[in-house]
Image (tube, rainbow, N blue to C red):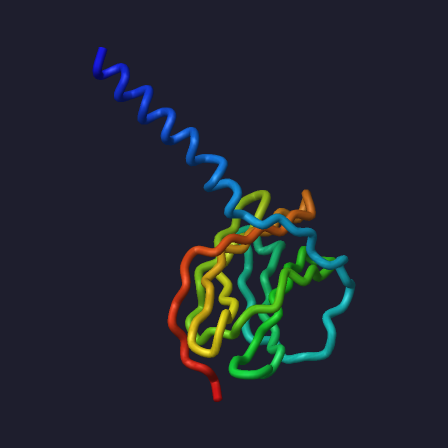
Length: 142
């Protein structure tokens, strides 16, 4: 009987935590897709395993204490801006699935710290999701 009660208690705790975990994600719609990239300098490109989709980082330049990059998703026809994030010298891993692409992005929250975000894009749904993973100390570019 005690074993069953322990399992029920554990199940209740797990189930009560799920809405909190799901609530950490922020859902958004990306900007409308464009057929041509604006003028700028490319920093790097990540190609999907099927070689039909790309994640492109473009130099946005310096603003305040940090340099920024714009991240675009390219499906072979159109570019979708996924956001403007802090430029990093370390390239974070990009994960491709049949339905999505995900990556880590950094958003400064002060002169010496930044939030590390997990960003996911689902092109067929037009859904852009992000959530904070952690906060890290950073050094300003200036």
